[in-house]
Image 1 (tube, rainbow, N blue to C red):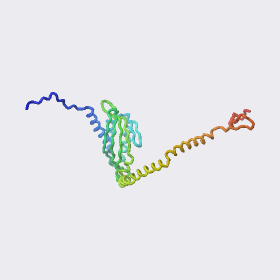
Image 2: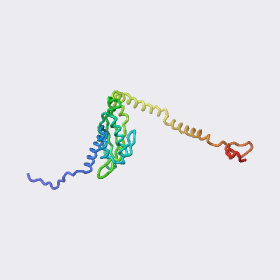
Image 3: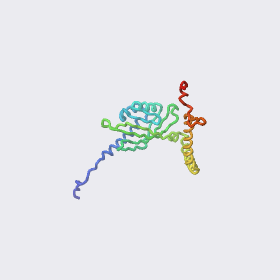
Image 4: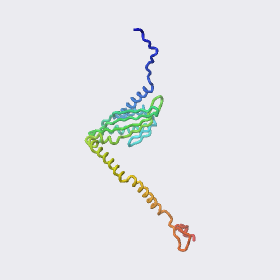
Length: 235
Protein backbone atom coordinates (compact mmCIF):
# COMPACT_ATOMS: atom_id res chain seq x y z
CA UNK A 1 0.00 0.00 0.00
CA UNK A 2 1.14 3.49 -0.77
CA UNK A 3 1.73 6.25 1.69
CA UNK A 4 -1.46 7.83 2.99
CA UNK A 5 -1.69 11.61 2.71
CA UNK A 6 -2.82 13.23 5.91
CA UNK A 7 -2.37 16.87 4.97
CA UNK A 8 -6.14 17.42 4.79
CA UNK A 9 -6.84 15.80 8.15
CA UNK A 10 -7.44 18.39 10.90
CA UNK A 11 -5.80 17.70 14.23
CA UNK A 12 -7.99 17.29 17.30
CA UNK A 13 -8.76 20.72 18.73
CA UNK A 14 -9.21 21.10 22.47
CA UNK A 15 -12.13 23.32 23.44
CA UNK A 16 -10.66 25.58 26.08
CA UNK A 17 -14.12 26.51 27.39
CA UNK A 18 -15.03 22.86 27.96
CA UNK A 19 -11.68 22.21 29.58
CA UNK A 20 -12.11 25.25 31.82
CA UNK A 21 -15.63 24.17 32.75
CA UNK A 22 -14.46 20.69 33.70
CA UNK A 23 -11.65 22.18 35.75
CA UNK A 24 -14.08 24.49 37.56
CA UNK A 25 -16.47 21.60 38.18
CA UNK A 26 -13.65 19.70 39.87
CA UNK A 27 -12.79 22.80 41.89
CA UNK A 28 -16.39 23.18 43.08
CA UNK A 29 -16.38 19.52 44.06
CA UNK A 30 -13.23 20.08 46.14
CA UNK A 31 -14.70 23.25 47.70
CA UNK A 32 -17.65 21.29 49.08
CA UNK A 33 -15.29 18.75 50.61
CA UNK A 34 -13.18 21.60 51.97
CA UNK A 35 -15.98 23.31 53.91
CA UNK A 36 -18.09 20.31 54.97
CA UNK A 37 -15.53 18.76 57.30
CA UNK A 38 -14.41 18.68 60.92
CA UNK A 39 -10.99 19.93 59.82
CA UNK A 40 -11.07 23.61 60.83
CA UNK A 41 -7.78 24.37 59.05
CA UNK A 42 -9.17 22.95 55.80
CA UNK A 43 -12.21 25.22 56.09
CA UNK A 44 -10.03 28.29 56.62
CA UNK A 45 -7.79 27.36 53.68
CA UNK A 46 -10.77 26.72 51.36
CA UNK A 47 -12.41 30.05 52.19
CA UNK A 48 -9.21 32.04 51.74
CA UNK A 49 -8.34 30.34 48.46
CA UNK A 50 -11.72 30.17 46.73
CA UNK A 51 -13.86 32.96 48.25
CA UNK A 52 -13.60 36.74 48.08
CA UNK A 53 -13.02 38.80 51.23
CA UNK A 54 -16.39 40.55 50.75
CA UNK A 55 -18.35 37.36 50.12
CA UNK A 56 -21.96 36.92 51.25
CA UNK A 57 -23.12 33.61 52.70
CA UNK A 58 -26.83 32.88 52.98
CA UNK A 59 -27.20 29.92 55.31
CA UNK A 60 -30.70 28.43 55.83
CA UNK A 61 -30.72 29.99 59.32
CA UNK A 62 -27.88 32.54 59.31
CA UNK A 63 -26.28 35.19 57.14
CA UNK A 64 -22.63 36.19 56.93
CA UNK A 65 -21.10 39.31 55.42
CA UNK A 66 -17.47 38.71 54.67
CA UNK A 67 -15.14 35.75 54.77
CA UNK A 68 -14.51 35.95 58.52
CA UNK A 69 -18.20 35.73 59.45
CA UNK A 70 -18.64 32.86 56.99
CA UNK A 71 -15.76 31.04 58.66
CA UNK A 72 -17.42 31.43 62.07
CA UNK A 73 -20.60 29.76 60.77
CA UNK A 74 -18.70 26.87 59.19
CA UNK A 75 -16.54 26.55 62.31
CA UNK A 76 -19.63 26.37 64.54
CA UNK A 77 -21.24 23.64 62.43
CA UNK A 78 -18.00 21.72 62.08
CA UNK A 79 -17.15 21.88 65.78
CA UNK A 80 -20.60 20.66 66.87
CA UNK A 81 -20.21 17.37 65.00
CA UNK A 82 -18.13 14.31 65.83
CA UNK A 83 -18.03 13.31 62.17
CA UNK A 84 -18.95 15.36 59.13
CA UNK A 85 -18.47 14.67 55.44
CA UNK A 86 -20.32 15.42 52.18
CA UNK A 87 -21.37 13.60 49.03
CA UNK A 88 -21.77 15.60 45.83
CA UNK A 89 -24.68 14.46 43.66
CA UNK A 90 -24.72 16.95 40.79
CA UNK A 91 -22.99 20.12 39.62
CA UNK A 92 -24.52 22.41 37.00
CA UNK A 93 -22.48 25.33 35.66
CA UNK A 94 -23.67 28.37 33.72
CA UNK A 95 -20.58 30.01 32.29
CA UNK A 96 -22.46 32.93 30.74
CA UNK A 97 -24.01 34.01 34.04
CA UNK A 98 -21.00 33.04 36.12
CA UNK A 99 -22.94 30.86 38.52
CA UNK A 100 -23.35 27.21 39.44
CA UNK A 101 -25.69 24.89 41.33
CA UNK A 102 -24.17 22.20 43.50
CA UNK A 103 -26.45 19.50 44.90
CA UNK A 104 -24.94 17.59 47.79
CA UNK A 105 -25.65 15.80 51.08
CA UNK A 106 -24.05 16.24 54.47
CA UNK A 107 -23.55 13.24 56.74
CA UNK A 108 -23.13 14.26 60.37
CA UNK A 109 -23.06 12.87 63.89
CA UNK A 110 -23.93 15.55 66.44
CA UNK A 111 -21.88 15.79 69.63
CA UNK A 112 -24.93 16.86 71.64
CA UNK A 113 -26.47 13.42 71.21
CA UNK A 114 -23.18 11.62 71.69
CA UNK A 115 -22.86 10.87 68.00
CA UNK A 116 -25.49 8.15 68.38
CA UNK A 117 -27.98 9.67 65.94
CA UNK A 118 -26.63 9.92 62.39
CA UNK A 119 -27.98 12.80 60.33
CA UNK A 120 -28.18 13.28 56.60
CA UNK A 121 -29.11 16.68 55.20
CA UNK A 122 -29.58 17.37 51.51
CA UNK A 123 -28.87 20.84 50.14
CA UNK A 124 -28.48 22.79 46.93
CA UNK A 125 -25.82 25.50 46.92
CA UNK A 126 -26.05 28.42 44.51
CA UNK A 127 -22.65 30.04 44.00
CA UNK A 128 -21.61 33.03 41.90
CA UNK A 129 -18.04 33.90 41.08
CA UNK A 130 -15.87 36.60 39.59
CA UNK A 131 -12.29 36.89 38.44
CA UNK A 132 -9.75 38.09 41.01
CA UNK A 133 -6.02 38.06 40.30
CA UNK A 134 -6.60 35.76 37.34
CA UNK A 135 -8.54 33.20 39.37
CA UNK A 136 -12.20 32.48 39.93
CA UNK A 137 -13.41 33.33 43.41
CA UNK A 138 -16.88 32.94 44.88
CA UNK A 139 -18.52 36.13 46.12
CA UNK A 140 -22.05 34.76 46.65
CA UNK A 141 -22.99 31.48 48.32
CA UNK A 142 -26.54 30.45 49.20
CA UNK A 143 -27.38 27.09 50.78
CA UNK A 144 -30.93 25.93 50.08
CA UNK A 145 -32.02 23.26 52.52
CA UNK A 146 -34.31 20.40 51.51
CA UNK A 147 -36.20 20.41 54.80
CA UNK A 148 -37.86 17.04 54.31
CA UNK A 149 -34.44 15.38 54.06
CA UNK A 150 -33.97 15.80 57.82
CA UNK A 151 -36.98 13.54 58.40
CA UNK A 152 -36.43 11.34 55.37
CA UNK A 153 -32.97 10.18 56.42
CA UNK A 154 -33.61 9.91 60.17
CA UNK A 155 -33.40 6.29 61.37
CA UNK A 156 -36.78 4.64 62.18
CA UNK A 157 -38.70 7.89 61.58
CA UNK A 158 -37.47 8.18 57.99
CA UNK A 159 -39.21 5.09 56.57
CA UNK A 160 -42.43 5.97 58.42
CA UNK A 161 -42.36 9.49 57.00
CA UNK A 162 -41.52 8.35 53.47
CA UNK A 163 -43.83 5.35 53.17
CA UNK A 164 -46.81 6.35 55.35
CA UNK A 165 -47.01 10.05 56.25
CA UNK A 166 -45.90 11.58 52.96
CA UNK A 167 -48.20 9.58 50.62
CA UNK A 168 -51.20 10.13 52.89
CA UNK A 169 -50.45 13.83 53.20
CA UNK A 170 -50.31 14.06 49.41
CA UNK A 171 -53.66 12.31 49.06
CA UNK A 172 -55.29 14.42 51.81
CA UNK A 173 -54.25 17.81 50.46
CA UNK A 174 -55.22 16.95 46.88
CA UNK A 175 -58.60 15.64 48.11
CA UNK A 176 -59.11 18.75 50.28
CA UNK A 177 -58.36 21.05 47.35
CA UNK A 178 -60.79 19.30 45.01
CA UNK A 179 -63.51 19.31 47.70
CA UNK A 180 -63.13 23.02 48.47
CA UNK A 181 -63.02 23.79 44.76
CA UNK A 182 -66.35 22.00 44.18
CA UNK A 183 -67.93 23.82 47.14
CA UNK A 184 -66.80 27.16 45.75
CA UNK A 185 -64.77 28.02 48.82
CA UNK A 186 -61.86 29.35 46.78
CA UNK A 187 -64.12 31.96 45.18
CA UNK A 188 -66.23 32.67 48.28
CA UNK A 189 -63.48 33.20 50.85
CA UNK A 190 -61.56 35.91 48.93
CA UNK A 191 -64.82 37.86 48.49
CA UNK A 192 -65.66 37.53 52.19
CA UNK A 193 -62.12 38.53 53.16
CA UNK A 194 -62.35 41.63 51.00
CA UNK A 195 -65.66 42.67 52.59
CA UNK A 196 -64.34 41.94 56.07
CA UNK A 197 -61.22 44.00 55.42
CA UNK A 198 -63.35 46.95 54.35
CA UNK A 199 -65.56 46.54 57.45
CA UNK A 200 -62.57 46.36 59.80
CA UNK A 201 -61.02 49.37 58.14
CA UNK A 202 -64.21 51.36 58.69
CA UNK A 203 -64.67 50.27 62.32
CA UNK A 204 -61.08 51.19 63.12
CA UNK A 205 -61.34 54.54 61.38
CA UNK A 206 -64.81 55.60 62.62
CA UNK A 207 -63.82 56.43 66.24
CA UNK A 208 -61.16 58.84 64.98
CA UNK A 209 -63.62 60.88 62.90
CA UNK A 210 -65.22 64.05 64.38
CA UNK A 211 -68.87 63.63 65.38
CA UNK A 212 -71.23 66.02 63.63
CA UNK A 213 -74.05 67.63 65.64
CA UNK A 214 -76.81 69.81 64.23
CA UNK A 215 -78.99 72.09 66.31
CA UNK A 216 -82.69 71.85 65.77
CA UNK A 217 -83.81 74.55 63.37
CA UNK A 218 -80.26 75.36 62.31
CA UNK A 219 -78.84 74.57 58.91
CA UNK A 220 -75.23 74.95 59.97
CA UNK A 221 -73.61 71.84 61.50
CA UNK A 222 -71.18 72.09 64.38
CA UNK A 223 -68.52 69.55 65.24
CA UNK A 224 -67.95 68.32 68.76
CA UNK A 225 -64.30 69.33 68.53
CA UNK A 226 -64.56 73.07 68.00
CA UNK A 227 -61.96 75.68 68.86
CA UNK A 228 -63.72 76.21 72.20
CA UNK A 229 -63.00 72.61 73.17
CA UNK A 230 -59.27 73.27 72.82
CA UNK A 231 -59.30 76.87 74.10
CA UNK A 232 -62.04 77.27 76.76
CA UNK A 233 -60.91 80.83 77.49
CA UNK A 234 -61.98 81.95 74.06
CA UNK A 235 -65.67 82.90 74.03
